[in-house]
Amino acid sequence: MKQLFDGEVYEVLPLRGGIIFSYCKGFNEENVLVAYRMLSFDNGRFSNVENDIYLITKFGNNYRAVSALCENHIKTKSIVLPSGKVFLMQPDGTAQLVDNDATPVWTGNLTYRNCSPSDIALYNNVLWAAYPDCNALLSYNLSTMREELRIGGAKSPFKRPRSISVSDDCITVCNLESQNLVEVNLNNYKVRELESFDEPIYQYLNVAGNRFALLQSGLYLL
Image (cartoon, rainbow, N blue to C red; front, side):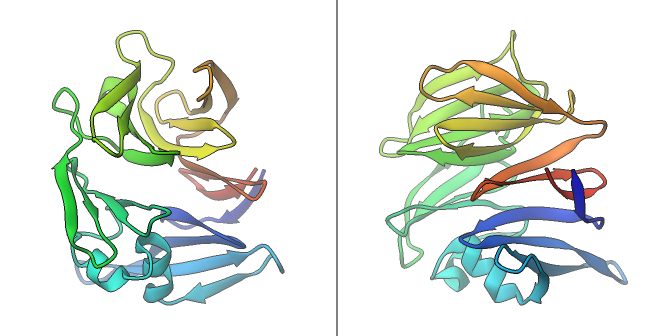
């Protein structure tokens, strides 16, 4: 495990040839200064990037109009669909699906038992959401936005699932309390533990075979 960045990272996003992440650059009076860096797989180097590069990665080509719908574009969770539509989820669980021109085509709420999800991920036409306070994952059909499946709950393999990501027909769950990674096979729903850490894990990504973990102490290459 190699540490790549030891600052406070807010979110890591995958790129075709690397990753991009937002982080705390410092403070200006009462305001947090946010900056962005990109890691290229071609040369293994970091470079500073502008806000627009981060926003187009997170919100798609019409990023200016889409990001304007967010109260806080860092805290908002987003998925750019193959059609170009964008699914947005706010920290309080309110969500919307917006068209290419940023017009909302669906608006609703993803709260479950009065709990808001902490993260979302897409698998085929299914939206998955993680609920830390319920120790559960729920799936929704994107066409109808109806709940289809729940994994976890009272007897759960998860302990405060913070972040989720999908790769190779599996969903990987970052458990904040147990400080480990758990993998759910989406073909048979079997669950297995991948690895554990000595500190909380906030996010995990597998980008072109490169595995990244955002821990309390920084961003790492596994």
